[in-house]
Image 1: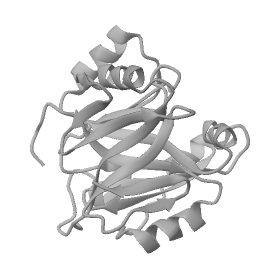
Image 2: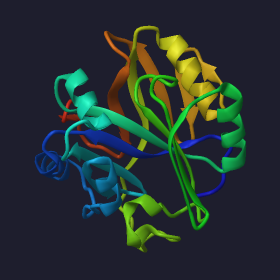
Image 3: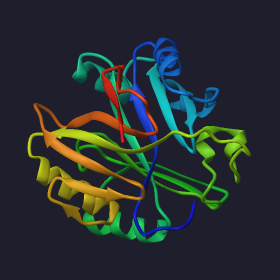
Image 4: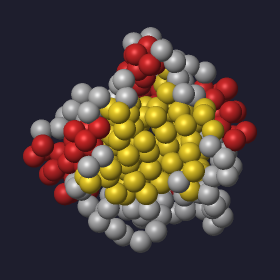
Length: 230
């Protein structure tokens, strides 16, 4: 992976009542690697599974306690659905300065050994939790577990997540909001990413409708989210 000025989507996150059943459905449909269950998410009343798809990732999170943000999101959706999009950027200092300048609230931030993860408040950037990340070694992805810390495994599969489609009450306005948070320009209802794009379409609510997957042979719907050919 070479440095780029455009952000790259690195992880697609679903929220589900039953983590294991959704993980099973995903692995029956997509050539995902073995799940990594991050013990650190327990502090938020969650359990998860992060699975490689090429050098990108699909995560499923599920609440295991009452009163979690993920549980409230499930209640609002009325079922499983999209929850978060995690973007990799080259310049995290510029991202921090931009977030502060725009007055965007940060709901979570972690810096570890030069790897950074910043989550923005969904009330400020509606439709999903937007995470902005930077890796000390760009090919790595710390949040996928030990095999991905400071390196990437030698063998990586052919598919990868390249973008997403979001529904919105006002698609162009939401595209503009996401673009500002990511430090890029929206082209109407679309945002260019490294190797893909975000597309905003009219809908009854602001939220993730689909993730785009390069190399996918057939579209599929899992846990309320479409996985579509890029």
